[in-house]
Image (cartoon, rainbow, N blue to C red):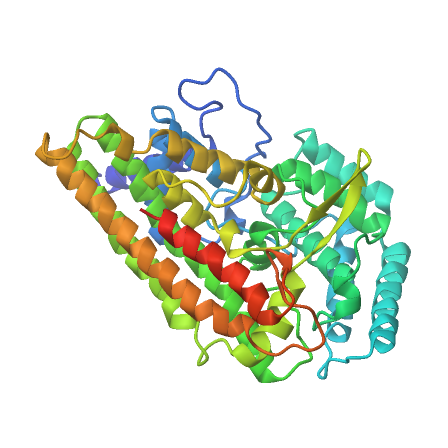
Length: 478
């Protein structure tokens, strides 16, 4: 009887926990209203359990009604993450009208990359026109835009009956990578593509994009780290939309390692978000010793996270010989459109889009790197709002002056350890990235994915501009 009773209680607690995880409060503490596009509860059998995060997510959901930052983290998990973080993504169980997009990308992927980049503009133009023509033809033949619009309109209105949030995330990624493939139409990136200023996209890629960007609260024509990278991993942790599928092993392996690194950063980032929230809750509750313990946890988790960068960004893992031409270029953009008579140019993906570094900077009270305009262009709304919440609650502005309160002094010491870790990372990032960008690529102009074509009469001058930005960011990290 006792065993049966304990089992019954355990099952009840699990059920309550699952319900709590699926139903965050509708508004953050202290707010009367908040825009909501929350999906309906989804079949838990489709979820890939992440045991290390489960109890922490339950705790965040429990704290959400009582603390603003916990609410925004819970909201991010529930909506953009489909109940988890990093976001869960399904690339299989889509409405029938959406499935041709995936088929078309995978069918054309072997045609995207060239083993030997051409330096002939005529040859490159012909190659790109052929690829774009094939994509337009397949999209026209296989995609019913009205059906696609109907599905996405229903979701936008809050009706998730025909599509899970995991599937929505997967479709967002698919359309994003299709747009990037159409924009460049050959890898490596070539000069004739870089010199384009406007590209006329097929309506099959334009119509869904407006819905997807509204849902995530971003405005750029290009993708972002969430859509193109985090959402590109399926429920089994495999990348779905690869770039260089027909290229040699060195290219394909370097590509895989590079993009998986960004997923690993978010996997290791979640315990940091959790510990930062718990530190704020403890401080606001007057429990400064607990706050210090959680800050020490942040430092420990950050050490493990940064090891992902140090262990992977070197020639033995990601080859500098292929990274610039075959991996970086696809994520760029560098074109725009006219909006109200004004030309607006968008950039591509950037390491500055990574949530964990934005969140830590905000938590520490360090001014962010991206402008308000670029945050709205490239960073999903719920990620922006989480960072803003961290910034509003930063501890450093609330501590007593040095020497007046021993506990506050210990909190500042713990925060300074985190700052020093970031400084070490940013100094190492500067020295490790430049050699990748210095590689010869005569088929293209100097370019980064996040900055587009770099200004300067030579590669050295162009990279000096980028190096100056990294030095400035290092100085700001204090």
